[in-house]
Image 1 (cartoon, rainbow, N blue to C red):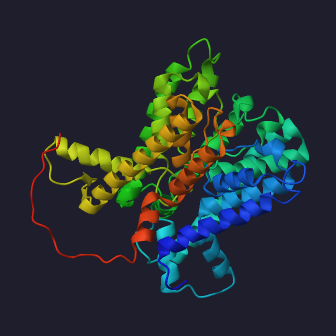
Image 2 (cartoon, helix red, strand yellow):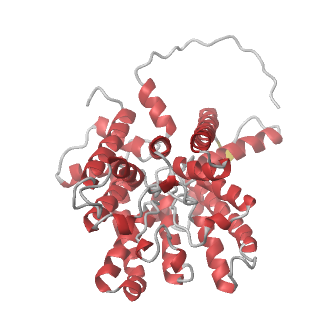
Image 3 (cartoon, rainbow, N blue to C red):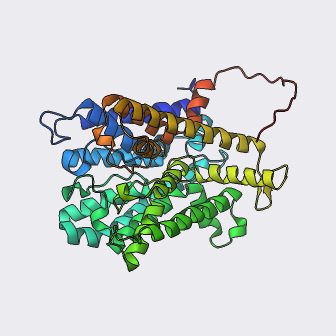
Length: 441
C-alpha cells in the first residue's frame, strides 16, 4: 500500500466497497427474487449506493429485503462520508496513530486544502454527520409513523435521513407505488422541509461547516472557499426555484398556493445531487429539463457528500469569464486572487464532465434507439451522482447499465482523481516550450 498514491488508494477503496456490497446483495436473503439477485442488478445497486447516486434497476422497497436495504444504506453511509474517512474513523477509535501518508490520503479524500488539522476535521465531519442524521430522523419520525406505523416508520425515518444527508436519493416509497420517489408525499411539509435541509447541509461541505462552527455569524472570517460555496449554493437554489414556481403554475400540475412553493423549492434543491423528486419529471418543459440537467452537472460542494463538478468549479469558471469581460488579468473573489492552476483545473473538469455526459448519452441513444433528450437526463444524473430519472434506467440493457455505472463511479471519485491516479508515476518534464499565441473567440 505504501507504493500507492492517495488517489489510487481512494479509487481502490471505492471499488472494494462496491464489490463487497454487490456480493452481499447477491445473498439469497438480500432480495425477494427466487434464488438470488442477478449480478447485474446487485452490482448496479451497489455502485449507485456507494457513489451516492440513486439510479436503480429495481425498486428498492419491493425488490430488496430488509437485509438488502440495510446493506444499501450502509453503502450509502460509507460512500457519503468516503471510504478513507470511515477507515480513519475506525483507526482513531482503536487508538492507532495516523501517519503522514494516511493524513495525506484523508486530506485528498475530503478535498481539504492542507494536512494540518485533518484528523480533527475528519472527526468533526463524522460527528456532524451522525448528529444531523439523528436529528433528521427524529424530525421525520412523527410523519412516517403516522403513514406506516411504528416499526416501519422508524426504519423509514432512519433510511431516508441517511439517504438525504448523503445526497443519495434512494427511497422506500415503492411500497405505495414503484419508482414513485417522494411524489406521494409532495404536500407533506415536515418531510419535504427536513429532506431539503438534509440535502443542503450534506451538500455544502464539511470545511464550510467547520467555518460556521468556528466563526458563526462573522462571515468576514470565513475561508474564501466557504463564502463562494454559500453564495453560489444560494443562487443555485433560489433562481431555479423562482423559475419552477412559474412553471408549476400550469393546470397540468394541479398545484396552488403553498404546495406550488414547496414543489418549486424541492425541485431546485434535489438536483444538487440528492435524487428525490416530488413531481413527475417527465412533465417538465424543455427549459425545465435543461435547468435541472445543469444543476445536476454542477452538483454540490467540495468535501461534501454530494457529487457533480462542484459549486466552486462553476463559480471559478464564471469568475474567470467575468474577469475576461472586464479585461482583468486575474480571477478574484472577496479581495482574494484565485490561482491560475485552479482556473485551469476548473476548465478541465468542465470539459471532462461535458465529454462524458454527451458521449454517454450518445452511446445509449444509438445503442437503445431512445430519443437523445431522455438519455441526456439519465447520463447527467449518473455523472452528477444525482439519481433523478425519467424512468429510463430500469428498461436499459447491460451495455447501457455498464456505461451508467462507469459514469456514477467517475462522478463520485472525481475524474481528476482517476487521471491523477493513472499519471502519478509519470515523469514530469520541468522544461518549458517556446511561447506563441492562438486567437480564441
